[in-house]
Amino acid sequence: MSFAELVDATNGVVWSIPLVGLCLIAGLYFTIRTKAVQTSLPDMLAQLRDGEKSVNGTSSFQSLMMSLANRVGMGNIGGVATAIAFGGAGAVFWMWTVALLGAATSFVECTLGQIYKEQDPDTGEYRGGPAYYFEKAYAHKAKTFSLVYAIVFAIVTVFAMSFFLPGVQANGMASAMNGAWGVPTWATAIGIVIALSFIVVGGVKRIATFAALVVPPMAILYILCSLIVFFVNFGEIPKVFGEIFAGAFGAHAVYGAIIGLAIKWGVQRGIYSNEAGQGTGPHHAAAAEVSHPAKQGFVQAFAVYIDTLFVCTATAFIIISTDMYTVFKNEEYGSATHYVGAIGTDVEPGPGFVQAGFDTLAPGLGSSFVALALAFFAFTTMVAYYYMAEVNLSYLTRKIRSAVVRRGMIRALQLLILCSVAYGAVTTAGSAWGLGDIGVGTMAWLNIVGILVLQIPALKALKDYRQQKKQGVDPQFDPRELGIEGADFWVSRAEGRVAQRGSDESRVSTD
Image (cartoon, rainbow, N blue to C red):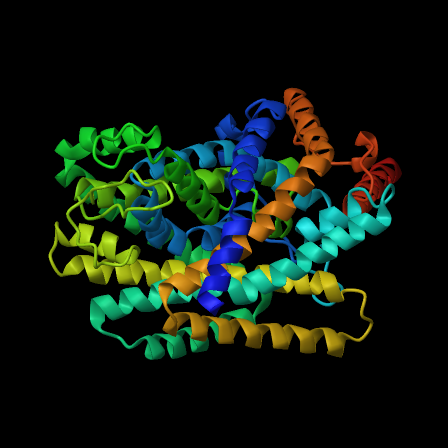
């Protein structure tokens, strides 16, 4: 069996129907349990406006930008094109569905990330994520199992974020630049390695600053350019939505009943793009300075909307409205007997679809713009990948007493991700996407099953937040009042707040 065949076989096991169903069912379940928390837009926007930051923590906005740096990448351009190519236009509907449901999942996992965060012993920065909450949430009941599960997730995440996933971003970036400007893939690989080296050695603060500066303008510019295409092709709107809804439910007259493919590819690429349930969002959420974990849960739920409902939808409209795509026949489902779309079947699904769509409006400029957008999106995503890999490596090594050994392992991790992006930039797209899907799918399996078990603390935090808001006060979190075990950071914070209040009252009494 060749390496490519092994990757395909493993991918088929990881991304089986049970995982697709689990993602959708978990999103629906959390929507019900949280009373549709994803509809709380005022809370999301208020926290972005009023969020704080500290020496050890980022602001809610910076945390959101770090999260978007991770979410908005190759999946928003190449991923949407791939979903349409193999699942039909209907895959877009299922991307929307997994985003709307996934926002509730994202709230739960990111609130858990905040509840069980801790401070790094070397830098003082806030660290958190699935490995932390898997270990701490039920350590008082099942210590050994919780610890083993956490370690397994951390190991999987280190390899996924430093080896499997960065290659997808590097490959898309190199392919787009080669197609637009003829830049050799090896030259792009060298450029990525040099730039990435400079960012990752600066730690979370430099990563957060970089993301906050780069992500918003690039995402806004991409959406604005997509809107130009939207208005130029305004008459195509009925066709676009007709293609999407007909394909979503297997009613398309040309490529027939491929609803199974539409769901599979829509959910798979939707999760890859917005990452709800994958376990990546909690890492960024934990880095934020907030007075209540639910606050950052709202912010991270909003990130899912930005990623899928705005950026992915913009990409889908460009591709479908300009007819610059094709739907490939799949023997497994068998009913797609005609190719759909005007673009040739010799064009590999990915950035080429979007570049061709833009070129219908401004010939020659589409390729350059998409290549530029991908360069920024993919690079910021690679930076975010490294951050998550470092957080999980820090989790695995935090009990090692020697700071020299811990720093040495961080340097080894940096070298691994640099080798990964260099290899990904010059390899084939199929191999890169296959490895990336294995990484995403394995993390999703572990995390979704885990948060279905550990959901109660997040639900308690949400209830507590809503009760305090009704009382007209700024929510403050004290896990002891809610019976939440293992939230040591928040216990110390609550004790410090009480001590500070007592000191202030004593000072006033003395005066």
